[in-house]
Length: 201
Image (cartoon, rainbow, N blue to C red; front, side):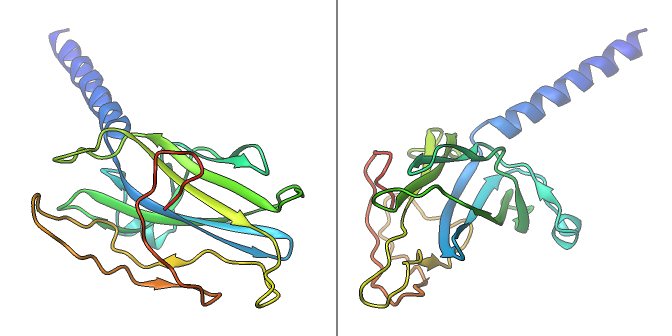
């Protein structure tokens, strides 16, 4: 009887630790990329989590992993687009305990007068940092489906090729070069976002 009690206690402890591990401070960053094609919007989300399950087999088998939170529409359309935000793992680090992955989905949005749509991914919590962290995150994208006068096309979002995780030391100055590509040839600039629903960076 004592062995069964200890086994049950260990099982409960393991389950509690897994819940803390999954729902604790775990988000490490991400990005939203969109492209309009054939009356549909193709949204690619790239996300990095701390301690999500991924290994070589998951990558080879293209196993769909459950992320956290939902991709929702805030303007021009409504409701939840994807929940939970599942993704295909593409990279992982056992030493640094991070997982990185992405997924592309296509949607048909209703017509609007201004052709502007806002969608995003918000949840809690950022991974613990020396400063900041353990707060809600928000990845927001604004898509304008108006045909451009300069090229006769609908704009596409720029694409940034960034490492999943960048570690820097506190109180040191850094200049991070973010490789960016823009299909439309637009100038891409970085700026700090404000804390509003439609001010993405």
